[in-house]
Image (cartoon, rainbow, N blue to C red; front, side, top):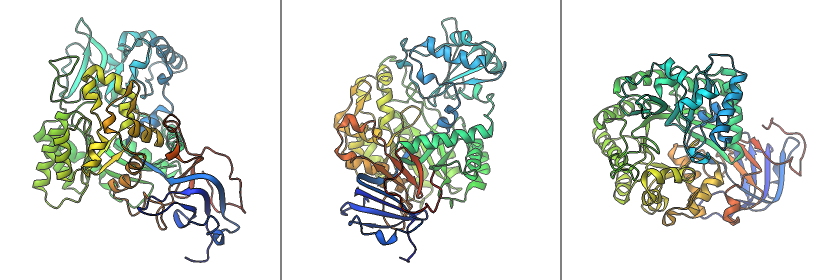
Amino acid sequence: MTDRGADLIVRAGAVHTLVPGQDPQRVLAVRGDRIAAVSADPRGLDHLVGAGTEVYDLPGATVLPAFDDTHTHLIFAVLGAHDVPVHRARNIAEFLDLIRQRAAVTPEGEWIRTTTNWQELNLAERRMPTAAELDRATDRHPVLVKRGGHNDVVNSRALRLAGITEDTPVPPGGTIGRGSDGKPDGRLIDNALHLVERLVPAPDRAKRIDGLRLACRGYAATGIGTVRDCAVAPEDYAVLLAARAAGALGIRVRALISALGMTGAAQVEDLLDVMEEWRDNSDPWLSVWGVKFGLDGGLEAGATEEPYACDHSFSGMLIWEPDALAEAVETVVRRGWRVGTHAYGDRAVRTLLDVYERVLARNPGLPAGTLVMEHGGLAGPEQRARTVQLGIPVTIQQPLLHDTAEVEEGFWGPERVARLFPARGWIDLGAQVSAGSDFPVGRFGAMRSVWGMTTRQTVIGVKGPEHAITYDEALTLHTTNAARLLGEEHLRGTLTPGRLADLTVWDRDPAQCPADDLRDLNPTHTFVGGLLAAPTGTRPPSHVGRPSKTLR
């Protein structure tokens, strides 16, 4: 180490480096965007304190690495920053009134869209609004109501603009909802979403960049320093690049460019041509991870081996034919990109493993981690063992289960819902498993996810307690395992000299918190690359000299 001082010093009650076998340290030093040193002596790095050092002297605090959310949708959070906040509504009347208020200040003919992080069972009527009801909020504007990433409801004006009538053919892998009279009721699912969404103009770029700034701050405030956004359209990535240039990214972003809605390898080839200019992954803040496919639907259409509890003639749907998906995945990996594929129901998991096995056999020597299973929700013991044998990493999302358990019980029944996201089984088999939220379907948050995985609590009580894991295991899924999934274990995941200075400061040790407190526990500070990404606390009690960088 040279004699140059540190830019940042954090003294704490415990600095958990997550290095196996290493006792907690007491002080950590940052120089530039890297960790310079740690010490078990709280005064052991005092020689690095200079006139330009920012010092946080927090003897009661706990320091952990910043968390990764390995499956989330930052872009949805960005859009939601300026959309109608229907997640605040308690009933359909309030839901419609929020849209009506926005319509009153929106020029006639312009699109109105809503936030996506809401569930119909949180409304008093316990259902989605219909096109006819949305018409009562406004018939002067096309309205797009989104719930998560698989469901839309639109008003009659939007249906007319899209040319959707009772004679419109249903796209393969999609659903057009219809009323008892056979006419469209405004509901669109999966591959039918594009019928309307293709008409919605993108928000102004300056507004989107501002939304990114706000969304990044929101993730960082919960302890998340890196997100793996699992459905980024090419035009969204262009906005991310502009936000990066404007200094608006407060957290690291790893993007999966979306192939959702595509049905053949030729379309995927065109997408890869667009992605070619983004191949350079040298920027530690923003890069393309690979391509995202969707094999089955979400809560209402996940492909299952057994029929749905609510409809014994329905077992969900596969969005891709297996042969076509295998060809498309091969197209991606042969051009040097990675693939993450949504597979939620157990039939989808089995089908995806068949596809991945074919791709691996026909493309020997693929780098480890090239093919990833997103969700693996209902993966049973045989499927989990096969996943491990094939070397396929999997991402799980306990917050999704927490927030949607009641909805899912209506479709699948309590036994299957209790089997979702079996973290204990994955870990015991030695799977490469990491964790995220699937926002906006689940609520993001570092300790909210840890709390969920350790308790298996949901909105309707504990589901599948045998699948619970320990606090230390849950921490690993969001840190060291997450960095490995991204191929960045040499850069992040542990608090050791030379690694990026991504860390969180907590006013108490999360490991010692009662479960009810852990759920909503947020850090006082989140640093990403040595920069303050979410200052939720106050100025440090000990401030020496002038900071050598601008903290944000």
